[in-house]
Every structure is written in C-alpha cells, then in structure tokens.
Image 1 (tube, rainbow, N blue to C red):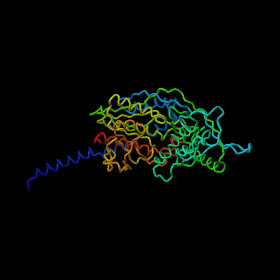
Image 2 (image 1 turned 120 degrees about the vertical axis):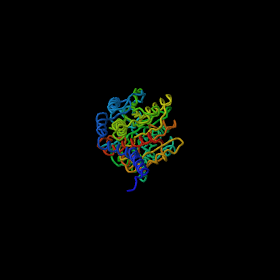
Image 3 (image 1 turned 90 degrees about the horizontal axis):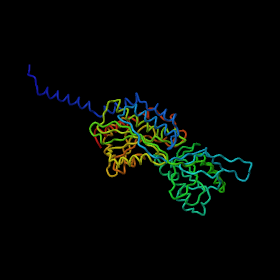
Image 4 (image 1 turned 90 degrees about the vertical axis):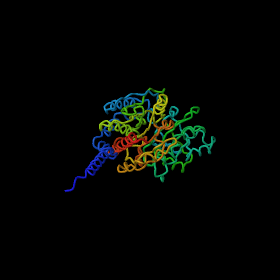
Length: 464
C-alpha cells in the first residue's frame, strides 16, 4: 500500500473549502433569495390595494395625501426600518372643483342637443367665467403651428391640440415625450396669442372615452387660461366635425381654483449601514397621485415596491454596508416640490449619495434599468451584472436620467437609476380614473421589488 499523499489531501481540503466559501457568497444565491421571498411572502399587493382604495386622489395639498402619508409612515415602521422621519415640504394646492363640462354645440338648428365631449381639466389651469365660455375652435398639430397662425387667427378662439402619440414608436415613453409638449406647454403657447381656452388630445395610444389629465405650465408673468384634456374618442369626434364645419363652436365649463401652498412632507426611512453609514443608497417613489386617479401604477406601485425593498433586507437579515434609505416623495405630479426640497437639504447637509434608484414607470414586468450620471458611463458598469440578472428577465441597462424625483440629485453628481418595466400598457391608465388595483398584476409587482433589491444589494456589496 502506498503512503498517503498528504500534500494532495491538504490541497483537496483547501480547494473544497474555497468552493464552499465561494458558493456561500455567490451573488446568484442572494439574488435568488430576494426573488423567493418576494414571490412567496410579499405584502406589497395588499398594501397597494389598501393605499389605492382608502386614499385615492392623493394630489398635493389634499386630505387623501395627508392620510396616505400617515398610513405609509406606519407601514414603514412596521417593516423593520431602524428609523422613520418626516421632511417638511411646502406643496402647491390646486383643486379641480365641480366636474367639468365640454360640449360640441350644434349648427344652426336649436332643436339639436349639444354633444358632450369627455374631458378633464388639466392641473394648474384656471376656471372659466361663471356660466362657462363658448368659442370657435381651431385645430393644430403643434406649438409651432400656433405661432405660425399668429394672434389675428388665434385670439378669442379655443385652440385644439390634436397631435396623437406616434403609433410606430415602439417605446411608449418616447411617444409620450414627443407629444407631451402640447399638454405641458400648449395652453401657455395658446394664451400667448390671445386664445380663450385650450383643448388637448389625451396622451395615450388607446382609443377610448377616458380622458387623461396631467399638469400644464404657464410662465409666471403670463395669465393662465382654462384648458382640458379630451379623451381620444372625443378628440376624433371634434376633429371630424371641424372638417365638416370649420366654424364649429365648443362650450367649456371648468371650476378649478388655486389655494395657498400647503404644508406636507416627504417620508424618509432607513436601515443604517454597518460599515459606511454616512454613504446613502436611496430607493423611492412618489406618494401623490392625480385627484381623479387611484394611482395604482402612478405611483402606488413604486411606493409599495420601495417599502418592499426595505422589508426584504430586514426579513432576510441583511445589514447593508451603506445606509439604505427609502424616500416617499410628495408633489411629483404638479411641481416636484418634494424632490427639489430633498435635494436641497441633501446638498446643504453635505450628504453623500452613492446611488439613487426610482420606481415610477408602473408595476409591470421589469425589463432592466435606466442609469444616469453627469459624466461617467454608469450604465456600462451596471451592465456587468447582466449575467446575474438576465435569468430574472432583466436584460436592458441603458443610459438615461433616472426619474423625475431623483433628477435633482443627478445634477449634484449622484448616480441615478430608474426601474424600467414593460410599459406598453402604462399609458392606457396613466393619470386616469382607471389607474386602479385591478390593472396591476401581483406577480409583476413583486418581480419589480425583487429586481430593485437585487440591484441595490449588488451596488452595496460590489460598488459601481
């Protein structure tokens, strides 16, 4: 019998130990744990149900938003965070008032009834005069066309912006951005040339009778005019009538009003870092929604996904090296007041944010992340984890600007990101009364939360 090769035995023992150690720290194992826990035990969908059914219409300055803030603070405390605090913010306070009325008036024959056009006032506009206003309508496809028509042809008219979202654009967010100026700045452009009011085609690919609201902006030195979004069917109906009767008139009644800025606050919850607590990794969404919307996809999904990230770290016993901070912002829809105040305080207090990821694109199947930095190709660095994340459907890591609420941190040099889901249906529901829990898949919602937790853990343990 030959003697034992102790050197070989020792080598084998060391090798096995190294393999076992590597297996224990294998990132794929930890990512699997995030997904197993989220898909098996997540309370996120029931939290979303509670948020959207108890507190719909969470517009800045409203009672539903105040109530939702109290609810979310309690949920965060029960999630196992080390601390939960509020950050005071002054927010704009605009109210829609009584339901709006937009009617296409009949030609000549007084016996005919006006045709109701489904519409919603745009956020930030003023009311019509008492009793409403009626005027001829002029249809345009762009802001440039208003300028070309000039004051002689626009003054006293209702300007009707009827540019649809481009159907051939595969990414709906790109189509939304292309057509969005007619809602964001169209009424102000019409007002500059003396228009009495503005109507805007809803920003959606869907053809239905559900109008989509949203904010519109006016320069501070310019008078505001009444403006409303028409459903896509109503827009088509009005456009067809104008082709037959270029002198067609519309009557508009809006009852909106501005009130003094209201006190509100962002919510900030933390799991303190074990090694570098002064360095922050942020995950967040915005708690406000439009006044007509339950806000399930925009952005209730982002709220409960952000809370779920904190729960996943807590329940799996993961103490991050850096401080993990969940921020629920307010007033994203009509001013970004919460995001602006958060970034102001962070700069003033010289806080160091390593990474800030936002989830505000709906609770759909996650596909990847948009990553931004002012000078570095951070999307390429994040893409080094594609092999780890692709088994979970995460394959897209492209350059971007994060999201609206982390945008003010981007300009301070922070690496920002946004969860990118399959958003083909997002603008079916965006800013409408049908943005409700029934249109959110529990499984897709949970997959998004696990995706966020996985990316955050990789940034925390491996750096950018």
